[in-house]
Image (tube, rainbow, N blue to C red; front, side, top):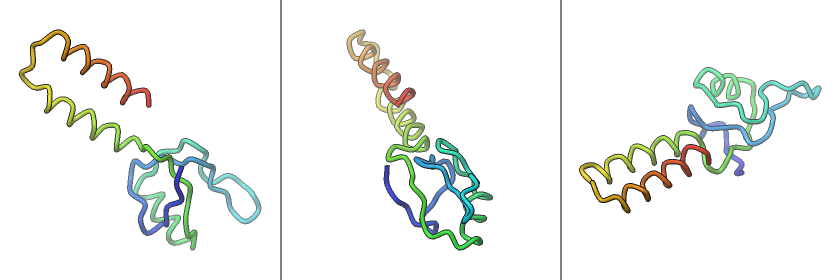
Length: 93
């Protein structure tokens, strides 16, 4: 988990803790995947920072894409089993 300023938020980041208003009402739950609309609302509301999962879903999808590129054309069984293990790791976190 890391604290990220609202100016630095990006779509697809995942909340590590719920975001609440001044009365304690939950605006977005833990695990919520940020969209640009929600980020804009946070910024307009004066919210300064939120807790984000250290490894967001955008990182996992980027890593999966890079993994596919690195293993393109590989037909060695051992290397392909390593690729499969890495895919499982990135998909499940």
